[in-house]
Image (tube, rainbow, N blue to C red; front, top):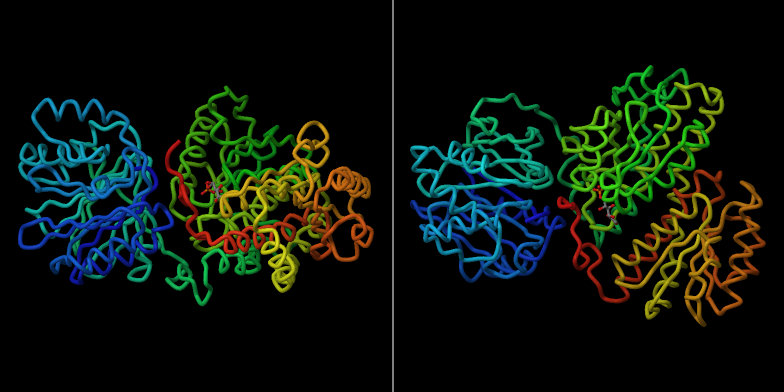
Length: 618
Ligand code: F6R
């Protein structure tokens, strides 16, 4: 299955408790069914249930599992086969000797299923995962009972993307996993070890972790971790330390992860700026490891990303082009590699991804690399695949983002991309040092400005509640306000399940204005009148166009912009900041608006329907 949460444990403690707590942390990855398997007295015991993890927990209450110190658990986001009890993971082999959980898609599964069916195996589910359980059970005797070797044999036959974790009833102290193009990290404990799709699952127990590479198999007991490639050759794996603690992955007094993450934005922005200008007032991105000569030689920048990360890339385009005079293209990663893009050694391709696992972005990155492009990842998840496969990486320090709708990641992606822009300007000499310093100082002042926005969200909440019965909301912006409008619309769609669209305000008259009718709320991101007055004037005209046709206009406008009040039905104030800084403050009320609107409509804000946090399929 494509974007599921995976946990494995072997040690001295009760596996079930650790696994269920880990799954709770990973539920954001997928939440339409969940299951666990443990080994007890030489037998595999499985419990699984469609629906959220709570359903599995009630099942475990009425039908408890025996005590065990080895187990695996899974939370699923369905593709092959609907979200039913039988399609939930773990899947067992026919003889109940092995249990398997899976994240990803096995592309040659129908071929393998036909082969199994022809050999007389009866499949119990519609999933691609189940074939692995049967193949593994067949491979174990061939590998003389060696589970890791059996796993390698099976993996060599699989096509597609997968993280697989398996346990064998005959080897109760062993958990084996394999990885190709799908996330998997190992947590290294004392007398216990962990496997998970994300460190959040085990950070309560250990902050020491190992990054697994592509096409690797890990065999883990309570005291030993052995990693090999798919051919059995031992490989060295890189240890890393998780620099946030468990409380960062908990709600900490907030009702919703999204509210907590919105509130964390000032800190996230400050953390992402910290240490990135040195005493000589030069932008310092040493950890990015990109050669200055190379950065001088590029002739264009291409940003590849999806969803919110692509919106952050669009914001950055305005700044990077302005500062460096390099052309910047922003491309949706899912479109990039299918249109024969023109990139090569002179291009800097920047992949922006919170999770670092988004398959569309990963595939676009690989395509760019294959064309010889220089690649840089802007990423929030240390040890994830996209930064590992890029030539260089600049991490955002947003901390774990659990709510499915991205908030603090967006702001920090803008910060990181701006830092890259300033760095390019510094290296290429397109800005004076004092100009760079001035921008950095403005950035440095942004956490306090974002904080001020957060202190004054009540009017936007009240508006969201008043408008919660609307059927459609439009968002308009110009210049950097345009991607902010796109982001506001995306938040509203995903959280409030409402028709919402963002437009470049000037484009409206070319068609979309036909959508305006009496009472349609239109949220307008108003450029600063002090930045480029013409942009402000033009948006006032655009407001008049929609208002004349019955729209209810909500202006997001800076403090001191008095002219806007007479053109709008409501004005939400944000601090006055330079034009390129405005997205960092203007996005926040839109996040709050969507969150409140979804709450008013009685919806699950942290886990909206049909979505998953980390989209590891194309
Ligand atoms: C929207 C959202 C998604 C992600 C997109 C990319 O709120 O979260 O649009 O931004 O799926 O994810 P990452 O950044 O993990 O590559």
